[in-house]
Image 1 (spheres, one colour):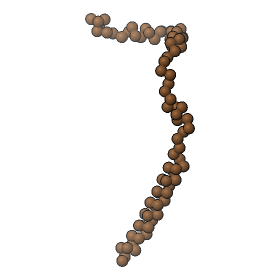
Image 2 (image 1 turned 30 degrees about the vertical axis):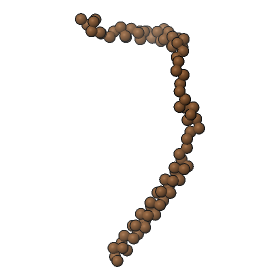
Image 3 (image 1 turned 180 degrees about the horizontal axis):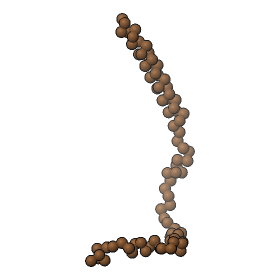
Image 4 (image 1 turned 180 degrees about the vertical axis):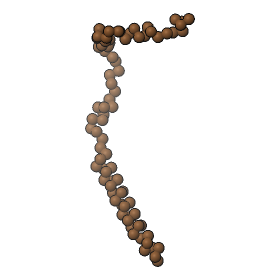
Length: 84
C-alpha cells in the first residue's frame, strides 16, 4: 500500500500534464496555423521569357562602368589547346 501512496501523486501529475499538453497543442494548431492569403501569388510562375533589350542595356552599363570589362576574364582561362 505504501508503493501506491508513493506513486499516485506522480501518476496524477503526469496525467494532468499530458492533458494540458494536448490542449495546448490543439489550441495552437487551430489558432496559429493559417495560410497566407497571398500564397497563391507567391507560387505563381515567373514570366518565362527575358526581355533582351533590358539584358543588353545592363550588359552595356556594366561594360561602361567597370575599368576592366568582365568579358576579359573569360579570355584568361587556359584551355588544353592554348597550354600546349
